[in-house]
Length: 512
View 1 (cartoon, rainbow, N blue to C red):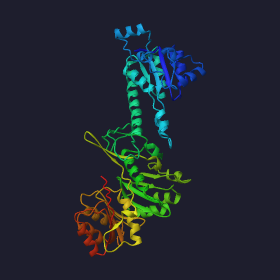
View 2: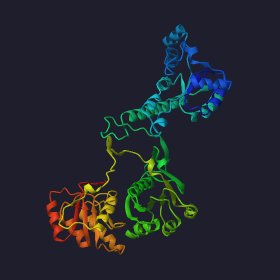
View 3: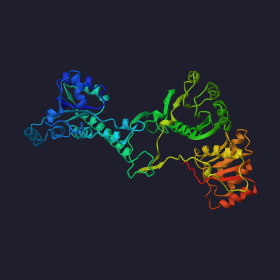
View 4: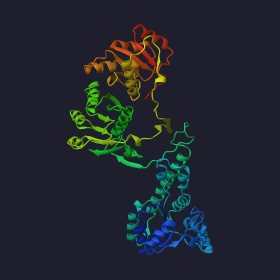
């Protein structure tokens, strides 16, 4: 058990510190403090010594140097069961410090501000704070350490219940918390200074991830798997109603938000197992939903619906005709939430796409991570290369642009049939591109949709002409694909032989 007799307090975040220090003082703990923390304690009539009284050296360089001194760090690092250590402390007249209460300069908050200057960010890199924290954490058997105000109440409760002492188990837990905290802090500094994440084109030589747990989840993809959510996902998606989001819900919701973000027009996407069941764009969300739902009238049950506009009542009434797991929208017009909340099992989520500024797509593999920049490449007119004798009509060109935005979000091998404002059929995730096309055609028949005069988008090139022939047989009159196959000429010949317009983009959108 560690007796707490002497504490050093130096905090950037002053929340709760006056009450905590006051309680320590009443328990007979001597307090040492620095700078603004000392002034705050003095103003609240809490006795404290300035650190300069301990070190015999003034704070200098605008406070950059104040605790980096042997009188402080020897007091933190001395192993009090080591006779040589205690002898040196006596000889140098240095007293042990039993408790360190430090939180760090707000670097992460500073770099989160818009248009932050590098000089401001660097000035908010704490040096003395992490040094004291790590010293105390290393020496946890003889120095307790608190890095967050969330620990004040439980620490005081134990201190009072144990006659001013803290257990070694508690000290060890606090030490682990410190090293997690300082590792996260250093990672954020490294990320910022090395351009990660930023517009830097090269991936970093060392890739670090430090994310705080947001919440535990009931389980992962399946009930026998443990799962938790880390990071700031709740800034992008805020649940307003319904049960907690599951592991699979979160993955599907993320896919839905990314898809609708592709479109400037009012757009609705219906998602099932990360793949779109249907996507529609129109002047109103109700019309857009009707177009999306018509693509596949069976799969949307129990699926996820996302919009890129505030959800209005007419659209909500249309969506309410079937059961859906989640409805996501940037906002909900007056009365819509109350209407939709009548179904308790449905989740309603507000989305903030602007908060989603992640630059990397990360996958776990045996022994490491695969890291890539996100697929944010947008198609523009310079990517359109007409390779057939017949050029696409204006209508076909608009349909190509629409279906290309959708196929990017479909698991490969991906085929999307559509018009300028809607999907008509989607084939996803098959081992053969022809099979994806066949499944799409079959689904269109199930939904009683004609594919005559439709456009086909393929996420990668047609390796053979058979995939194109399948699309032509279904009624497609135009095709958009990356090109790049050694049999491109064979495919182009088949298109010309059937009076099909075909465009190569030179861009592939594999999604695994």
